[in-house]
Image (cartoon, rainbow, N blue to C red; front, side, top):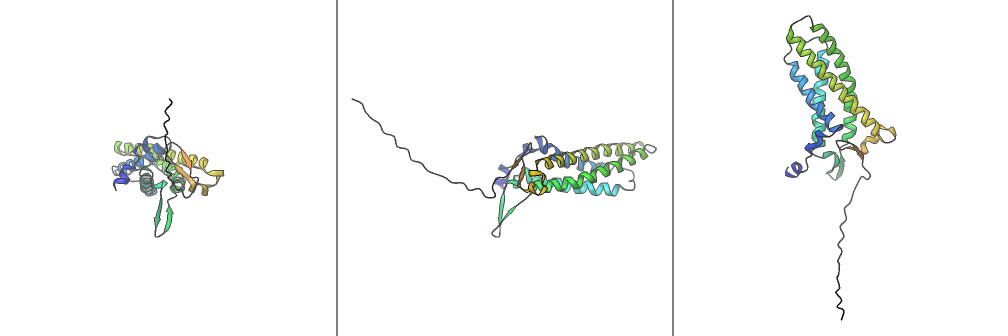
Length: 195
């Protein structure tokens, strides 16, 4: 556990675009779920929004743990087999699903906000905050989706298995196995005395 803690990169969330956007996914989905608890009542269709927020929260927490602790760069050997987590492909697929889901959710919440204007101030505030947070989440998912699509080798999504998210950029894995060789060299110094 100590080696995992020392290899952790907590500066990941300060790096634009991937670190910041992936942090936004976790933060704003959590805020949205908390704000939902203060609504006096829920409109029809908000159960879809709650599902999308919960899905995004769980997936983004898992992705952030993988990236902060460096598990996306490691190859694990389990029962004699090499296991590599294709985290960039997983982030792409999650962002694709949540991009569509959060866009629909933003529309649902926007309609609920417009309808809430005839009710209490508390309901207006809750749905105004939810409209903003869902819009930010839709933007974050769409931006990650576009950036990863551009990073895919030759425009092929399956090529994202060879791409690693660094926080501020993506890099391509060149070899499946890397070996480290150590060479020892001995140097001899000779001194010559001139008379």
